[in-house]
Image (cartoon, rainbow, N blue to C red; front, side, top):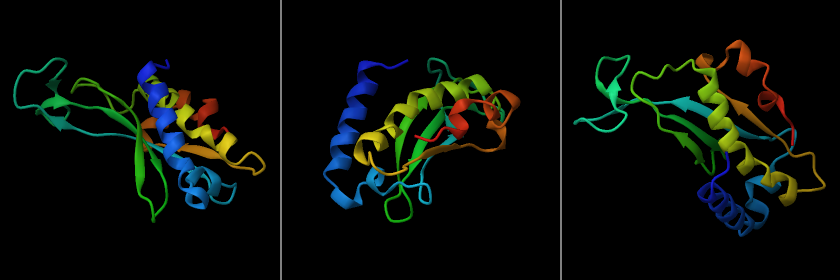
Length: 146
């Protein structure tokens, strides 16, 4: 679901990338040099009883958010596109969570269409083995070329 905040962040990212001229990652994206959205979960320890915190699989108390980052290559690092706050007991292999975060992150990658309309620019999603369950591997997101 697109929120006003997500739309504003996408607008700001587009403006920031457009000021980069030829260094704009969307302009540089091609079939041979695509943009990648990386999905990964991380553990965050909570030192007090916070809302939605719970015991994690590592047996501490906290959260297990799922994050989507865009990999801009070695010379640029990356940017956070979307984060889904999840309870500490949320499993790393929840396909629905991976698809929700990818749905939130995907519109940011679509700026390649407007930034480089004549090129065969593309964007792919990568995720660790936990995200490669049958539902996500057949998702249109995992292989969509834009």
